[in-house]
Length: 211
Image (cartoon, rainbow, N blue to C red; front, side, top):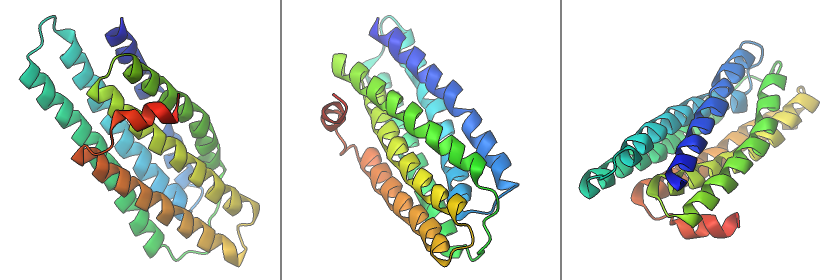
């Protein structure tokens, strides 16, 4: 049943996303990268949004005769939470990028490892949510597909930025790459979050992007 598959996928998202903030947070004790700090804020906000979406999905699909009006309200609330999480993450990343003045970045390897794993894992969830939504359109699954598309692209940018920091931490260009990576990711997250809140990002492009 598609609703069961959707709930299991959402639960898997919660389980696999939970270690991210913890590991990146531990990495912050060792490093001072603007990208790594912003990534911690992003992952924490996104985890909260995914948990809310999972809870709402269970409520919406747990009733044999759901109230259409209540279902729509809950789906709007869940999608607003995801969009708000993206905007909050983007704003935090942009603020960190603008205010960071430290040249020494410390150890960014924990954050880099999580980012590399995130590209693979989030890419799979992007494909999975797109497929589920394509088989049976659902507002929560559609917005999760958009969220994981953003997470995949963001993790790719974070990987590139932290790899530069890890390879040449003392290079003058590294600071600009680190801050520039945060700024680019931040703007993308804010734009995607606003589109999600306004409901302008339709499910069709996601299905086409991961068909």
